[in-house]
Amino acid sequence: TFEPQFQIVYGSEGEWANFFRQDPNYCGTDLVRDLNQPGRYVTLDYWTSRAAYENFRLQHADEYKKIDHRCAEMTEREVALGAYERIA
Image 1 (cartoon, rainbow, N blue to C red):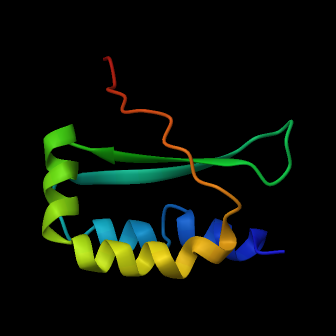
Image 2 (cartoon, rainbow, N blue to C red):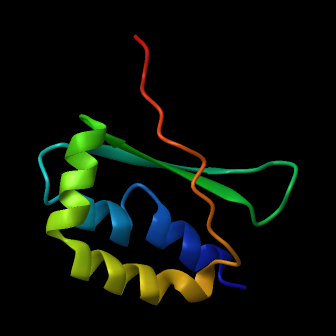
């Protein structure tokens, strides 16, 4: 099982978070586990704005694809749940 490795790579101190940290508009990552469905996770990446995230992806598209490709073996499938905004 890739679960322990997945938790490290996708967690708040993992490879993705470290990659995103090069941008000052990145605010952090939370990895949450579904208590009712083993092996199911949701990653929550926080940015100052949607535009900041999209700009980062454009500027770092090649590296993003490389990391995503390396991590693909740890996931059965990936689904974007949407884009959300914090309400204070």
